Length: 429
Image 1 (cartoon, rainbow, N blue to C red):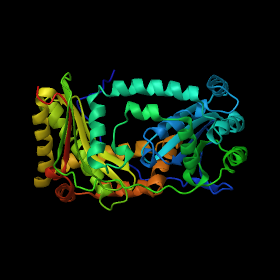
Image 2: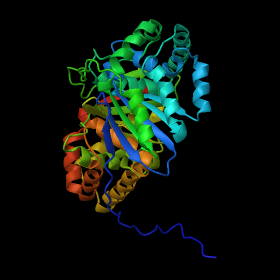
Image 3: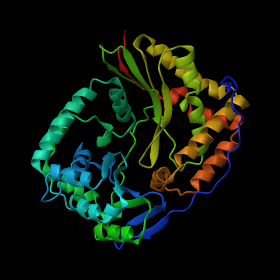
């Protein structure tokens, strides 16, 4: 029997270029765009409602999460248990995700049940009746979650990052407090819903074996939603540049410290963003990255380290984050800064850069592999202002980048003194 020699890697094969199919666009009577991704083999129909108006637009801290988390408990004439039983009986998965820029409401519905389920869910999506008893239970759960999160250095560090970089008047810049949760009211939720869940704030993405009956059901349910005044993006960034500052939160009972190096990043549409994604991956975006080799493999300071862009509004935050043994905090930060500086002075070896390119090309292909993945990726592209051609543009950028280009980008955007340092944990072990 022939045994596979696992010490010899398989031959590398170039990826075959392909063109993503443009989804079919229909506009409902009220101009809501509905993008369809047809796949005759998918009898489970996947819906994604992207609603503009995430936590960036809040006028009361915590109201967006409360409003959209309690929608499925707010069907007029039905208890939350009855709603749950209805969705279960009709094989429906319902999920809500709340972000800075938008709220995602997702349904997975068997094709034969789409019309029935959509007619039911519109009762709590479009005309919810928020209940005080649901808010009381929600408040209790969230206070417990908040008390638990306040014990986690990773949570504290992340919140401190927002507070350091974002404008102080922005509610998203500060941590949620128990007093915020206690101040929420049913009237607040009604106001939030009426300002956000409107035709001019909604985009619909649907994937599966879609036919005219499904399109008709979407039109019946969502085609009569009214429009309201548009949302304006608030001022995002702190007036004073936070470059070089150090933000520390002492948590003396922690055996590890959470570290974040962060700065204002590149908007998704910035001309350097595609090439910079290669530099990001090289630095800390995959298991073989520079930071992983340094902090994990060489020094054993951490289990993992990661860097990426967090897109927010019309800009982004670029960050490096990790958790290290508390007594290694200072040296871990020093090693991170060394890797930033090394990319500015040394050319990346061609072999190392080729490895990163191959990893990224494979990872990029997996993100659009299958109808559902493609729909979710397209929804993100649509939100940042690009289309399906972004796939080819990214591949071209990855393939053509050179060591010289990587070094030029590092010199422009990875100067260690430009980063804010956030530490949460045992500061003086």
